[in-house]
Image 1 (cartoon, helix red, strand yellow):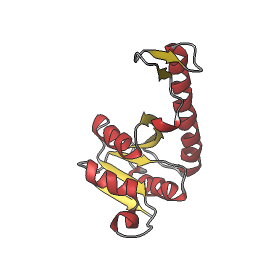
Image 2 (tube, one colour):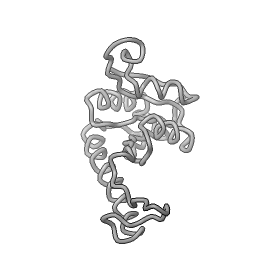
Image 3 (tube, rainbow, N blue to C red):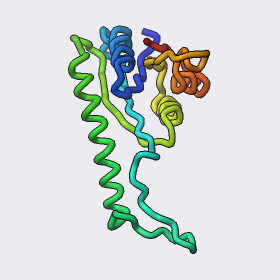
Length: 158
């Protein structure tokens, strides 16, 4: 088997679910294969832990201490993984490969996916695409960004 470590970026869309089914079709019969289902959480939508004052000193904002903020971020990641795990459980259909749900917090989906590919030795990215217009729109802006940002094959699924 050529692709032993497949990444499926997951954003709860029907296209992402289709990509998961394709990835499981590729890796499912192989117990040594792994499919990682990744949710990228945009850091812009998370609460900002500090507000900078005039002197550039961080003042806590709605969070008592850094440990509390860290627990909040861990909770966000765990919830995203749990949501993805539900979809994985519904999609397995007898697959023998290892399938894991994972989540990362990143500045952008493209950056989060590209970093995950590099840090987890991914062989193939299978991802959904929306198809809304010219070249970038035909495959979706995230798909287009991932194609440009990673050095592994990317299979887009509509």
